[in-house]
Image (cartoon, rainbow over all chains, first blue to last red; front, side, top):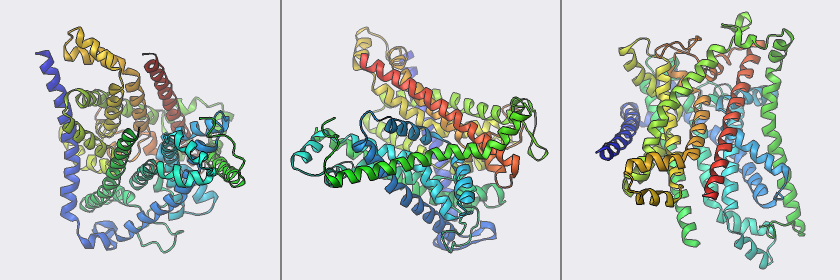
Length: 277
Length: 298
């Protein structure tokens, strides 16, 4: 009896969570679909965003994302390769870098915003701009990306490295032609995780890329990201809820597609590992 | 391991290694720069406190009146702690129940679907949770007791946000408990409920604890969702229905116009947040290492 009750209780908790998730998503979907249209996606916002669309905001979001990725991906990949392939096993520097990365992965995004404002916007004189926003986000996603890539590279079996050595390949060739392709799923997963985090970010962008909702003309222009737009519409603009929900729908669709992509990639990867060993 | 990672004699390889090493030094410096800049920007404020011998003033000063030079952060620190604790207390039992359901009751297909849903929940941006909380949850609470934007609303929204982390890490911890324990408890003829609650949960406790600590760090650092539903009145959190302002929300609200000491005090609160998160992740790591050692022994 008690056993049955316990099972029901667990099922109830699961249903509760599913119900609240459906409530959130359903709300976003219903309210968003009521307000969304093709013109909404491409038009300029009118009347502080109450009507009109999110065209310039989408463009700013994509620019910020692009800058963040362009800065974080090559840097992150380089550091990951060094940490897993070149760093001497007992080097204190490598250990300390790893610990620093782990801590920075947990630092609240608003703190990155403070740093970005002080360093990129003021110290380097970029002002409130797409560039300083994107670079701030790059700092934010770098730790997670490095750690994911590094663990992916470390998971590549040493047999592959030995095989490459035996074939007389140089280390650089082995890394480029064998290790990186073998670790590709982890790299892609880290990338997509970073994209998800960067697209959803609001707090770090409030005082680095700013609020301006016009079409940005250069990278040094201020531009409003989609998440910032949602925040502004719901907090500071009365009667902006419909547009806020529509923007939220766009944002969620963007992120969910990227997240499921990461998930399925990781799953496939593990399956292949299991078969290969 | 050591053979394949040995120093190479090839020139191109050495050059690549040096280049990547330099890159790593650069990134490490960049990361250190973050802490340095926080320190540098908050230094005037910290130094003035030091000179006036008012280190405790930060905590004793009852009010947050930055324009008059009174920076009492206690109400916001307490509000941050209250919101975080409330969210974790709500999400922990629920998340554990979900983990147990996932590991022991759900059929493989259901478990797969449920896992997918939890991942979805984890992927929803905080600003969307804030929007939902503001337009759905807050009016509901207002009907019950005004003003609606309150400690309770912040706790509910946050608990929903950290739930997937707790559920998924706990499920992982439960899955990695040695199967002997389950077999042993079955052989003893224990009930399913007793097996789970008294044998498996205690065996997985350090994994669960480290997941819960990570979720706590996330709740503490969350800005947007709390900012949108908590009401943002600087006061001691005295009741569930009182509006409060947390540290992160304070930074987001005042950074736009803060100057001089006020700005420095905001950076100081950022530094404080970083230290707290640091502490939490350190404890989580210790707990995790303990659990790994335990698993190796068992």
